[in-house]
Length: 353
Image (cartoon, rainbow, N blue to C red; front, side):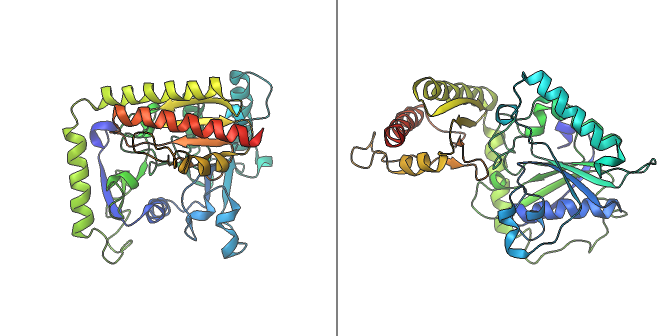
């Protein structure tokens, strides 16, 4: 983290992703008495009682009743799915104008007259996962970060989905020109073998004077199995000699596959790839149907021994199909992926026509 950010910092560990987010937010509250948090519409930060408040879908909160953390949701950062008839630059300009109004006018319900604003943190995903595989425009994201940093908010980056090269870089925030205050990591840290999350905070946020011993603890956290697994996973990344070249190649392969689907299927509207993740935006809310068909599309006639394709559901975006293959997927398996995906779209098209 010091190599990437140029900042000194400390690291703390937790169990799963939601617990990691909670630990990160606990660090925020330990360092500020401010109350309000800011997230994006479409953001996803967990389903625990606390983190479900920060995730966009009310479905995650409905079981626990009607209580609310002081939270501001910024506009959904996806130009393609906006109702705007303008070009992206105009949409970006108007959306940023709205956010600046929130940040400057008491009428917006977020700030008050005076210097010290009551905003604890801006929490962002570099690429929104469950919200629809959305990579916000770089200028847009950097300006949003600047606005809230100027208001005294800490910048918290949720890398649970994006981290460890999923977007082609070690961390998703490296696609932007800003340094976060707190970074939350999980998932790929142990390659899914055992739960472990990790947060990094730049000094002084995790130093004993700001986060004293006893502020956080959990039974069996940092257990030897999880730490040994994480160490092994990190070693594998270190030993991957051509990772930048290989992930660039994977991105190009995914983009080629997505372009073919968009060009050939009446169901697809657009798509793009970024590192080891791809998105296909559909014209209707039928992602679930495509995913179900894809699982057994070649059951009767397997393609090189493979009978189906597991695609990712983005949860809150039923009009998006996500591709999240292993980062070290072989060329042979990419060919199989392409054939099965094409078959799944063709069958869905026949079924829905």
